[in-house]
Length: 404
Picture (cartoon, rainbow, N blue to C red):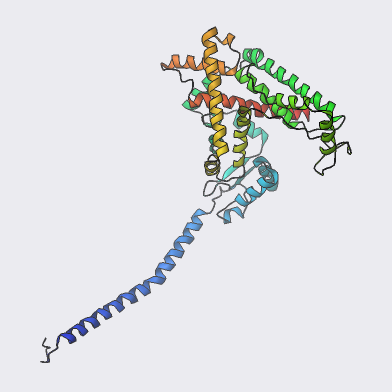
């Protein structure tokens, strides 16, 4: 290779020259990258900061709220979870917030990256809203907490065609005729069974107190199950305990009174104020499943993300088993109702349970809609189960307050 000045280079010199040029280029490239590094770091930090600011809760102007909540991505979630652990109830925590703000209207932030929840704490305004059905509807929060366990029940649905279809299915179970002819006799029978249980407990306790809340709850469940499936529904929540108490011998009673005192371990025979803790009878798996499903849903109360929480809850074997048993025994009762209506004929005056009335209503709706009846659909199974749970919660609470 000949240079312009007449000198020549051999092959090695040419290679060295090429390598030097490459090294110079690489160094320039490295310098460029090293200069861009800090810029990328600053850009990443700026992006994260803007993302953080965008993720902060946004308060609605003019409505009271916790100042600390809008300065944290978690909002009111820490306070919410602490309140639920302490009180066990969302409503009690909200009442505490109402007292804190001393305002009939305030907002809380318990949904991560979601909109604030506006809480109204004024009876007259709430009643006005509740009576304006065409202007106001169910909150999506209701579905967040209920849809997992309630399924296709109408209780959490917004007003619309699907909600109206479900309401049509249940429209006659609160009629005066049905309540007088079917519901009242079953409630009366369950009340007599509860009195029988308390007579046995009072006799054994010999003047000592005993817990009664779950007795009322179980007696209410018996009434609602009989109201829903008919008086010949064989499974009871109260009867197993009655039978167990009747089977106690003298030594069992003595042991119960001596060791069945309060939480301190003292016996009831040593302290007249110590409650006697009576044993419970084993109930059928149908009763267990009926009670277990709403109990599993109660785990959502302290979760700011109830739908995500329910996804994990429903994976548990016990929860899956409870739903499987529920679907099984409700389907069995629908089959019995269909057979009975076929044997005795159809007619609302001949029905003796809510499930028979619902089956009859489904038949009528199918004829009106020009379709085949879907007696074993999710809507049927879930709405029938919903009758049980709704009746259990409302009646049990009312009776407990009445006794208290």
